[in-house]
Length: 76
Image 1 (cartoon, one colour):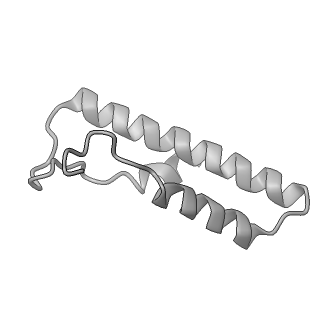
Image 2 (tube, helix red, strand yellow):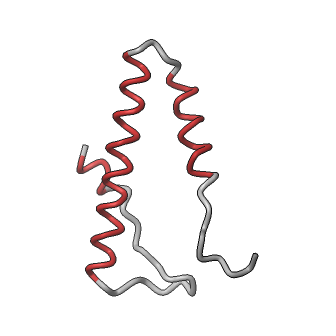
């Protein structure tokens, strides 16, 4: 699965569209994506093994992502 996640790694950018250049920051962001993917995969597999609906689990995971809040947004 690790290669499937690595295929999802974007070119990380700053708000102005310029790519991030700090390798440590990029490493942390990519590691975070790997952890999220592993946890989401485990949750999906658990739900399916317990008889849950795959489409519902995927919808719940999407809804969770959509509800993430930026605590650093100064526009509020």
